[in-house]
Length: 228
Image 1 (cartoon, rainbow, N blue to C red):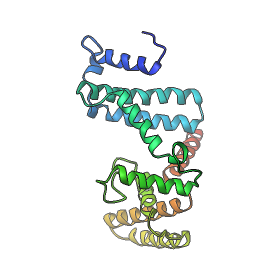
Image 2: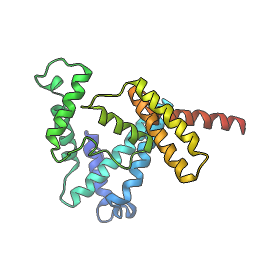
Image 3: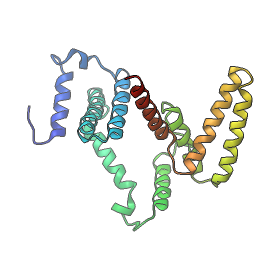
Image 4: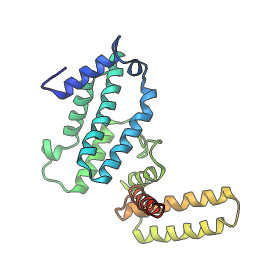
């Protein structure tokens, strides 16, 4: 099967795999059963980015794209939407949310771009009453905590890094004190400390999740060297 349009060819391949006489494994999949694979492919893509390997990144991006096409094919079979609908919707969203590029908003600063982005989102999703609505619960905990702080800081006076540093120091002392007590209290204090940590990281332009990933990788590498 060949085509001048690789995206259209990918659609046809996926439809063939799902059709009667296609692949038994592909035919039995559902949106729910594919969830672990989408998550795994996303993490493998992150690893390829961290490795700085363009060939690995190209391959992993293809695997992520396959998951998108797979879910779109399942939806198409149920008459919900198609891969073309997915592409059309994101094209429209990109144009709608970048009036400074495709509209008449004119040249804008990053702060103005972010503020306008949030305003447009409010119009698009009026059902969201809180700034935290739409924050996925399945995100890694550090990442989700930092995104929460980021969302809360928009439209509200932000605490200064100095204030956040004091709050972090207090949470650290609370954690040390809690360690002398029971496990439940220690766990709660640890969570409060990590929450305060992500708030300070957010204020200083650091990404707690990425920082921990890199530190873990360095530690793993050093341990592997010791065990050679």
